[in-house]
Length: 410
Image (cartoon, rainbow, N blue to C red; front, side, top):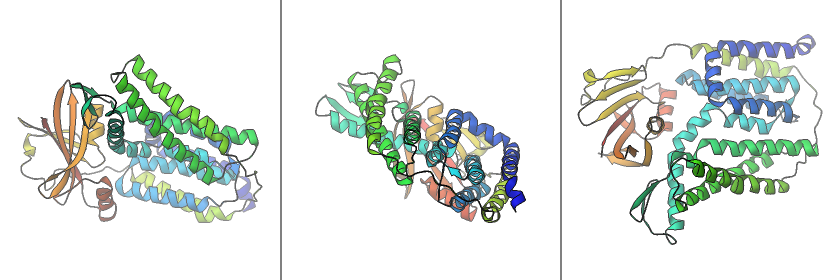
């Protein structure tokens, strides 16, 4: 045992290197989308890591096991990438007995899983912010009405773009907070506890919402919703005045208290956590490489004349009719993200009823042409609007799920 402990650093690095080689495509895809954030998180682990009396082996093992179970069943590469990141955290903790909760939050923040989750919520958050802006301004300026993210002022339409509640500023704010907490720890040679860190993160989220709220108000007052120098300047100034400056003021009320402590290493976590984790991660790594068969057209409603359709790729089937554009996709696609990526502006998104079932109705606009897009998840000929519901069905019942998206001009 002592012999293994002597070489555990070398063994740990070798195992991590082998897993990264096995999953190199997934790793490159993850780094491509969040390279700076991931490198920053790694740097924080080395700079801000501290010894802790908490036994983190079992919590990390539990998180990795849950993530890999999801990856194994659903072949979700973003979830597997996050599990690999947590596995590296686990190895680092066992080699050095140091851990950085601040860096750990950054790892979660810059995972593609978090980005996907945020993309699903962005439209709803933006619509809610626009509504509160409307309630604030309607008594001061002549706003005729609000429709989603469209403000009608003096019969002129002002549209708030997607970036006004985007992921980049949200991440930048939390990243700035993480750096500030780490610098405070280094300055005082003491450490924040997990409650202080989580509380400060909650404060930063509130400040980010306030920043975006005043950003939208300022853009409307200056009638500057198109992307230009003034638009971006307003965004940066709101970020500085409503997030960075308050953060620098509030950090004075968060005082690090815990001193660094010494911990004796032992061999037992290797048997109970490290080895089982390696088995789980390796098994998922090989399973996720297998070819997926989605059966998107199985038991499809005959009204969709699929003989007229074409495969865009193995996850997307397109049907073009005289009045509709129909996409049949796997459930991991989000029409809001797809339409935004294709240059459309999301005006409004809401649930409506089609017969006795709920579906999503989205108003989108491009080149001053308005379109209505309806979409839903379908499983066993039933319609669903919740991604969580259909993922749970796939996860535990292994039922095929598809997404159907119908779009036509208004």
